[in-house]
Image 1 (tube, rainbow, N blue to C red):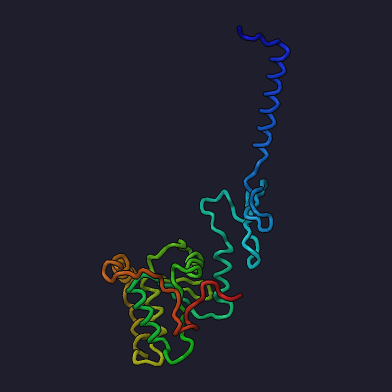
Image 2 (cartoon, rainbow, N blue to C red):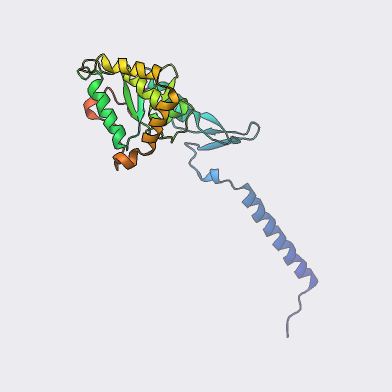
Length: 239
């Protein structure tokens, strides 16, 4: 026969179970995933009042704020500070190119050959669009950090040129010390003034859209050239 439990014992068991459940619930609610992270380098600290977050970027970069309610959570120090550092010690314009595009790399070789080739420093510096410097300068110019649709010419005064205008403005300073001088600057200036922008840009966009199909692409991204140390920007420029 089954044992009969006294009402007093049953009440005690119910109260004990309720106490254990409450204790487990309090522990679960008080647990934070951030408590499991190393305390020496905090990753994320939320501020409930302003709805912002501070991101720990290490000793070399100060903590910055990120609007967690914004639609695009771009970290200002990862592009704005870097973009400023690019021109701190060297104000030469920067040409951003697609590092895996064979046509683009051929264009870089052409510019290296005809931009004061006998001098240590030419008129331009280079960085791949895929590099951290490239992404920073893209965002400085109001473009998406992963936009590979166009060559970009970025100047120290904050201006950004793209598509056909970028190419023609680059051409205005090419040819020094070579047979292209002064014809390359002259032809570039004439084309920039005489040919309507929509005509130039439509031709550029057609070539750009089909550049991989026509000219192929490399499996590796060209970020550097040891022969021209003074013309390629390191991924993280010295402060």
